Figure 1 (cartoon, rainbow, N blue to C red):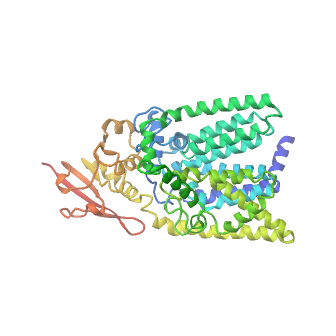
Figure 2 (figure 1 turned 45 degrees about the vertical axis):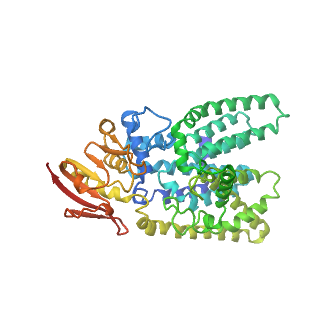
Figure 3 (figure 1 turned 180 degrees about the horizontal axis):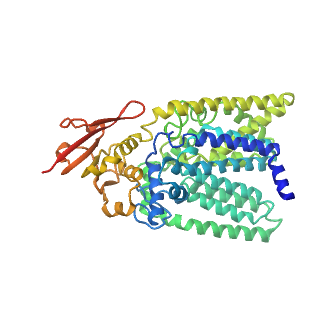
Length: 528
């Protein structure tokens, strides 16, 4: 009983109550309308959801592979951690937007907790931990990712867990093994961590070797055991990376290393890396992909432009505390620098918590410099952040939700949710594939039987993969719409505006929320 009272009294301490409020704010703003805004799942979310559904139903992915470590999906090979985490809510509640997105909320709230613990451990100050958790919970860098089905949130959580456990391993060296295990898991969650985690592992080992003379035997054994765990975990990854599939994936997203000289490739990487420090990206307009950021908002709140500089200035006097937040913030941009689309918020997400920690040190600097006004400074920062976040959140619900339909492939949701009850009346359902990968939306929104899909699927071989991996399955056909090549029988047709059929009367027009035309709908009987 006394232990229970101690636990309750601890929870009621001021710092834990504030942390509870931070997490409550996070949950409210992430769970509110999670299935409605963004307005639809996009193709990766649909693929994640359906592959989780297929695993739950049959133990195999959409391609028929049994419990894979790499899900082929559209040929880009998704990683397993997030997909398997989606399997439980899909098993319990079925395929919905919110069941695919819920694990991102869960992973992200753990990332906030871990950021609190890391910042507190590094600084030795609960204040820095709380402010870092608060800032991360409302930063635009993380907002959209933390309420949509992005794999990167899982990778971030396990990476931060690995960092925190390592920081605690100074008291218990064998915690290093758990730290390494967490880093390995992060590499099975998101591709960026296949670059960052090995670098972090190297940093951890070098840090330990700095204390080698103090306990050489123990450190030698811990490092050896850690390397065994790490290399064992990396073996399936190394096998995959040596395959042609991995090479084609890197060629699709990586820097054009085939047609460029090495010196220019190096310059490209440096330029890509530095692009992430552009104030336009960090503070003004952010990532230009509307699935990563709302137009007109930076990745960080504008106040961070000053606080980051003050934080760096403050940390320069710290004997060693500056190393971890600065080092890991710098590491976080490396994966994005190796790809073509830069600056890239998703691939550099691991930098966000550490940038936030540095920014929190900026507040510490102001409070120490103006000690007589430290409460006023704190309230000004908190109210300022909340005010900026209120503008951001309101825009997300009222403006972004309407204008981003195209980016989230809202057209497929309109088609399948509007007409699914009528599909049984038709011999064929034909849909333009110009919006890309329509088949996965048919599977997702219809919760289509995976065995039937695998038995009837016909794959595209003569079209670029960006159009549609699947040509047809069951009664569904995905192609450009041509009046002279419609299938025999009664057909329901969803035509992209560029595929509009002048030979047939329009049955219906499906409009997105912004008023743009998604599909022209036709009905055609053709018994030849």
